[in-house]
Image 1 (cartoon, rainbow, N blue to C red):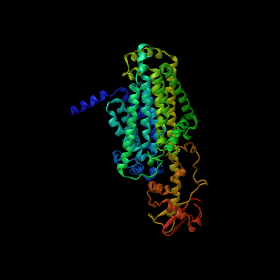
Image 2 (tube, rainbow, N blue to C red):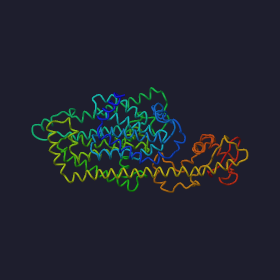
Image 3 (tube, rainbow, N blue to C red):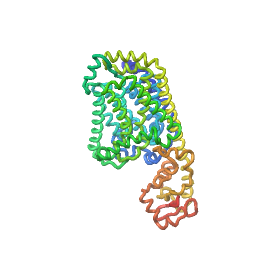
Image 4 (cartoon, rainbow, N blue to C red):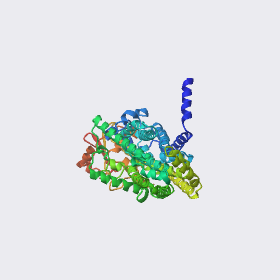
Length: 555
């Protein structure tokens, strides 16, 4: 027992304080942000149809999901799945700050906060039956990225970790790519070399592939390529035929022209998200905060380009702009992976959080130049000397400190805006759920009053409201604000043709049968159905053949 405690104590003493801080902030902010979801049972249509298991994940190429979900709960339990989702995100945050060399208290806290409050996490939580698997995928991604940077042969484990990340959720491959691009950019900024004299001549003569950031970049590209190849091979080995789902079933099978369109769309969508046409749930103050953050980021990039004298070295200048060009592409990589997809879901945009990581990492290096010296441990002695000299210059710069402060404030305010958006979304979804619950309870009361009806009889709830409005208010209380929020349930979603039966089965515990959409539409085309009045009029419930039919809407 003493040996066990001694080993545990040694492990704890090797963990840096910043990691304890990162984990703690992630847990506190994460639990506060998602407490409303974890403390209630808020469902959407997918969650209703998958109260246990992982749904159709393995048919969507997520073959690892059925093998790991039992580590948490086979049921869609918020207290287990939701809490574990936050815990796994907290661990992932610790590896991210290590990979990006974020060391300051403010930088660590902001990284943790923006990671757990980003809207994609709330979207993940609406799919509570697999919410923890999304977080586990991110953890695999973060650990793989960290191992690639930290250890000489860490890339071997990283290939399998990023492959496993994709086997849980393919879109998070873009997070790995974004982190790798950002790491090379930071290495370029941190590792400034000599600028004058004989050493400058020698530096100019240095071969391109001898530069550490170039070697790192090549290694990261090879790791990403090997991970993608390993994932595609794993799909072939599984032998399972994938169903069509947002282009995920055709990764690596598109034409060159489609990939070119996907690349253009990636840049366009990232620009829209942060500047020109933000998502509906970001409209207003959050959108303006994002625009301000982009301006701050541009100022940071210009500052480093000038103060680090990147422009004096052609290769450094070329690499600098190439990496800046690649960063939006990496964040929007989902559009290249699935070029037929026009608009990625909220869950798939999690890679956009890396823009905030970029702001935090640059601002920290601006406010505390000693971080550069820590990150440039592999540079020449002359480079280290220059870093020490610039520390005193940059450290006394009021402009540099002011810019770093603006960067920190922008990310802090964005994190709070995301906190607000998340809880408004949860509240609106719970309200929709309760409204539909009351409405369908009245429908079931009328059904129970029918002579001859017995529990367990098959029931078809027919009718579509479009273009007429459903009987329940569904466009009030900011419902339009969340039209782009994937997974958020509003009244019309719960009342769709095939979901009504699942809703009654799940919340009322009544077996009304689960007819397919084709069966429902076939019934709605019959003359007997067309002659029926619409609920709540008398005669809106009739037995046709052996099935009870309720006409809820005129169409």
